[in-house]
Structures are given as C-alpha cells and as structure tokens.
Amino acid sequence: MTHELLHQVRLLDPSQSCDRIADVLISDGQLTAIAESITDIPTDTERRDCSGLILGPGLVDLYCHSGTPGFEARETLQSLGGAAAAGGFTRLTLLPNTQPPLDSPDALTRLQSQIPPDLPVQFQAWGAITQKREGQHLVELSELQASGVAGFSDGRPITNPVLMRRLLEYLAPAQIPIALWPVQPALANQGVVRDGVQALRLGLPENPIISETTALATLLEIVAMIPTPVHIMRVSTARSVSLIAAAKAAGLPITASTSWMHLLWNSEDLASYDTSLRLDPPLGNPEDQEALIQGLQDGILDAIATDHRSYTFEEKTVAFGQAPAGAIGLELALPILWQTFVETNRWSALDLWRILSQQPAQCLSQASPILEMNQPAEMVLFDPQALWTADAQTLKTLGQNTPWFNQSIQGKVLATWCRPPSR
Image 1: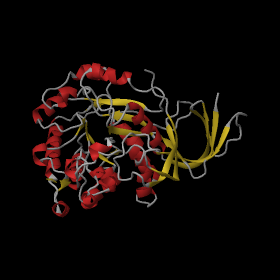
Image 2: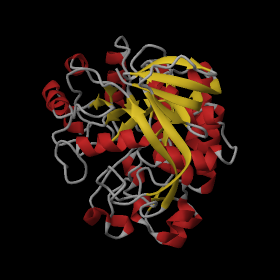
Image 3: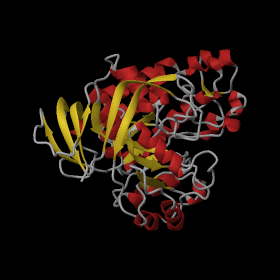
Image 4: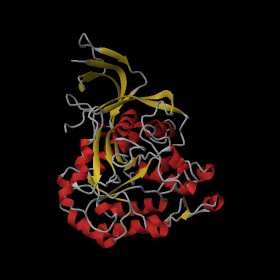
C-alpha cells in the first residue's frame, strides 16, 4: 500500500463550503484522513510540504472536441486525456462531431474501445440528437441512451423548431441532459465578429447578436410550453444573459454555460487578427464579456466549459476569416481563470471551483466530485504560483491554437487523482 501525506494544504470543496488548511493522508488513491494535524502516519508515507498549494475536487468539462475518430492529426484520445489530467479535469464530455459522428450505439462503442485506460480521467460523450448531426431526423434516442451517453447534443445549431419540440416531448420522461446551442445560421451568415464599432474597424464579416438571441428566444418559448430540462451552451451575449435571467425567474428548467475564452477576451482583442481568437460563437463586445462574467457571479449562468478544440498548425495559419473556429483550453483554463478572477478578488476561490467542478456536474445531472473519505479520490493538487511556459514541450494536447502559446503561465496542476470506471 502506498501512502502520501499532503502537509498543510489548502482544501477547497464548494459542495461543503470548505476552504481551510489541513493535513491530508492519501492511501492507494483514497482519502483516508483529513485533520488540522495528522500525527498517526504509516512508516512508509511520502510526506509532501503543500504550503501555498490547493487541493480541490476534480474539474468537470461540459463539452470539448475529440479528434478520434476521424481527425487524429488534430488530437487523439491519449493527448486529449493527457491535457485534461494536466489541467485538473477529471471528467471530459466529448461532443459527437467525430467522423463518423456519435449518432448510433455502434459509433459510441467504437469510441469507448479506444479510450486509453491509463489516464486519471473519466471520458463520457454526448450522443448526437439528429442523424449525421444534419438537423433533419432524430436518432434512435432510446437506443443511444441505453448505450451509455451522458446526454444528447448535436454540438451545432438545430434550426427546426418542430424537431426541437418533438425532441423535448420525447425525452421529457427520460431525465437525461439535453444541450442545445441557440444560433440562427441564416442570420449569422458566416460572420466572424460581433456587430459593432470594432467589426467596422476590422473589416471582418459580422455575426449579429440577434443570430443568438432570436434562436434563444424561440428555444425558451418551446421550453415554457414543454418543460423538459435543457442546458443552453455557448452563451456569448449580454442580451442572452438577460433572456436566461428572465426565464429562470419564471421557473423554466434551464441551465446555461459559456466558454472560458469569452470571459477573457472581447472583440477589441481581434485587432491582432490572431486566429486563436477565431471562435464560434465569436468573441463578444466588451459589454457582452462583462455580462457573462457578472452572469456567472450572479448565478444566471451556471458553468464554464473549455470547448477545447485542437487544430493543426496548417489549419490555423490562414487569414482570420478563413480560419476554423476553436482554441485549446484544458491545460490553461484553471491557471488563467485563477489569475484573472481569484487573484484580483473578483471571485472567491470557491466561486471559481464551483463553476468549474460542482455546477458542470449538476448540469450533467451527475453527482459532483467531492473530497470524500475512504472513496476513490477524484481531486486535483494545484499550485497557483508555479510558473511554466505553454509550448510544444510542456503541453499534452497536440494543438498550439491558443493566444498563450509560448507565453509564461502562472499556476500549474501538480497532480490529478481519478479512477476511471472499469470498461
């Protein structure tokens, strides 16, 4: 049996409103003792001075992109899981936009057979809502649910309101998560920047705010009529935050999330034409960014997702308007969000941990990771002061599509504990 003593570590557990300094004894991957001072220590225990370090429940990512199957040059399950563990994420929820897409039990079985068994990460997947993710015909929802999907999402807009109504009616008894991205593609018109002064200055095609809000308003009206719980993903505008606030006040069964990148950047940052900032939905204007931050603080938005998406160097080395949308984030989100919001006292440490761990799990209708005694540990040890450089040697992901590539980062995950379920 192996033993490790974390001496005077800062414990964070939002489920228990716990933020304190303690000794923690870990034996064979389980928490076996937590106390102000542990003196009864097995003789072969490895002692680790954890002054200034943080031990918290594992982080939960609501949606991210797998390169396997079909796009292994961008990312493999091994590199994706390695990036998750290096960033403190113990649960990954993969979107179904693989090739072939995850729209059948066979496709899900093939994916599950390729999950590496040696990583401290639990892989789960969203099953597609429509066949081939084309938004036309529903998949065999009951069969896909029985195969073990975490929930249903196309990961792309569903524009047919009749189909959406049928979906909510059919899944009402199932009590399984449904994640929808409200966008009206005809209004978005392949725009890459939100409408406003900055769009005019940059000379880039606009994606107006109403491309999101008209679709969101339609979705909320359907949920008001058919109160099946729905998760609204990729919220990116101030107006959407207002609509969600009103819907929650009216008692609609909804949760909502935004991407971590939309909290840190806005349309004014696009003057660099850095294709790592080419996202979909596009970065909002400054007032959108502030509304998202405040929305999380006020509980209108429930969670942060990385929406991690890796591309090859060649794919992103094009003009901004032609670049594919997406950025990596699993290894960067925790340290950068910590420095941006916790170190500046905008959010408490428990606030940040809550919207990266406890509440994403709740959006998935799952039990949250907690610091629980005598159970397989699902937790992360984080040093908020450690300095490192995000480059090809240190990053586990295959992608380099981040504005922090080759930049110094403050804050690093030192260890991740998680025992994946047996397969």
